[in-house]
Image 1 (cartoon, rainbow, N blue to C red):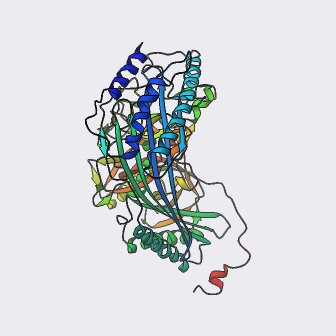
Image 2 (image 1 turned 135 degrees about the vertical axis):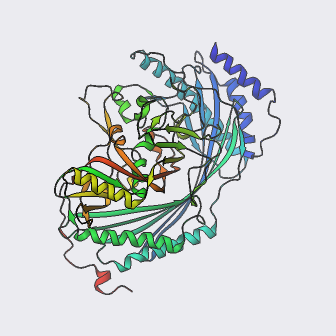
Image 3 (image 1 turned 60 degrees about the vertical axis):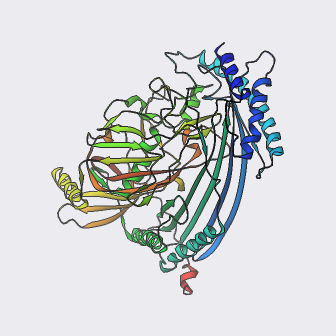
Length: 592
């Protein structure tokens, strides 16, 4: 009965002409009649009818430019247009969404790239038909799976929200931007001509301009734009004993003009090359280290990305056809710590989609409405060290009953919550010198000969996985959602040993971190007075639910330097690869 009432309300909304103004977007205008037609007539015999229906589209321009030793080795511009039908059958209490094991109620089709309504309507018809058939099968499978589980106060599957309309200009990439990025690829890759110790240096530039369209049976409709440019500098070589070495650093901005200056970018590439060249002859970490560790602000922001950032969503864990499938779902580790202290009492964390910059550095995670059409809101996540809230989409939990505008990642038929601009602040910030002095004092008090400073962690996107790398350490008999979990950090690429007597720094290589959990976050004893910005793409697989097409979502993290009283740092396993027998011909003959 509840589902039918929802159907009637949606049908009356569409048929009654509640919307006063015609949508300014021709594709949205063409899709609206299809919504009412499908909602009223799409029904299989003896099957539930849809109670909610939406069409979601994306038009993306994706530019990939590659540079090596001053030459352009890749320059590809692709355009992708797709249309997804998203259908909910059942009721808001329980429907076909948030389930793993038998489809998800969504149906995606490639579609036209222009504003001609005919092909879009045809694709909408086929997508809706497939989505409905998928949805009724998924609901039946979900009901069967729930019968095997003990359900205590299960939260509904869909929460109410206030309809919003936003009409932003479509996003495009200009020829001028393409020319500027080609120049960057040439100039940055040419930096490696001066570093014979490096076997290979690459520049990979990715520029994206996406236009999202959405219309549903509740009155939500929008056209929103998303832009991001990322420059990834990578380099590989070998140590003198044959150990493979690599380094990577990324720079990201909303648009090409917002990137740092050419001189600043060149300085970033040169610093990487110098750092990697030093590691060729650097000594490896010989013994395990257990003591104080200082992460400078850039490394601290990378640390937050690989720990807290992926765990602040309150989207409930999905129902699974088989228990083992739950282990693939990422995020949500912090839900069990709500209202508990997870950081020092002098630290706060907020997520602010409305913020565009931090101390003149552009932020990349801003937006007006999320992928469900809900207006973005600033959310206080950690206050005085206590976890007080989580990021929510329209999938409610037993703790949070409504969306706060963070349904950013479309996974199948629903949107899952994710960060936008995550900002960590400390009310007792100290200078970098004061932090180092305290680090050395703590190490001396423990009788250690040296302390450790970390300035850069490896980029997860270069092979370490997209989001927090969870390490589950149970008996193997627990439900995957109940097993104790901690995070596995990617290796440190810029790490030094600091002598506690002299303060002399010695570069290290071959150092990895022991597992890090919430208990380690509480061992932060000091933070810096200056913060760094780290921007990145949230990979679409961060939630562990497969979706197509792949939609990586831009986000930014702001964090100060962090001093931990105790972390585990251990040597990596020694992997020696024979060095090349002949010298690099590029440098042997004299680089042009």
